[in-house]
Image (cartoon, rainbow, N blue to C red):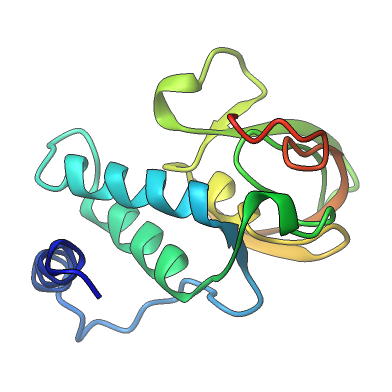
Amino acid sequence: MGIHFIKLRELIMNKFSPNKKSDCKQSHKFITFSDYNRIMNYIESDLGNQLVPPHVLHYLYLFTSSSRKFYSSEIPENVVTMNSEVILRLKNDQRLKIRIVYPENVLGSNDISIYDSIGLACLGATENSWIEYMDETGKQYAMIEKIIFQPEKEKLFYL
């Protein structure tokens, strides 16, 4: 582990009081090394940013550090990666098409940032799995019904 990573980890763990039990689900998540590196850079650059709630960075850190990592060319096709488009089935059987993006790439109503609870819940999950996320009414559940587009499947490793 590099010194840079150790310092970042110390900053995050000290800033987010690790004694508080987290309700963020961590099991069975996957991420590409490319997405991992970019997300870790976001965490580092947004530490202390008044516009980014600390718990968002905390959950991102927990997700990235505990996920199984793959090279972009080897990530399974049924995994939601950055810039993937998915169809979610909500509890009321409503279907929602979304694209998982980095914060600065939110361009339309279907673009969901990884800084949003539902965006982070989708990232690394697999097709036909249930996700748990928080909205203004509390804890919600949805199923990732289908991955319409995954950049890695299309060999678009730069996305």
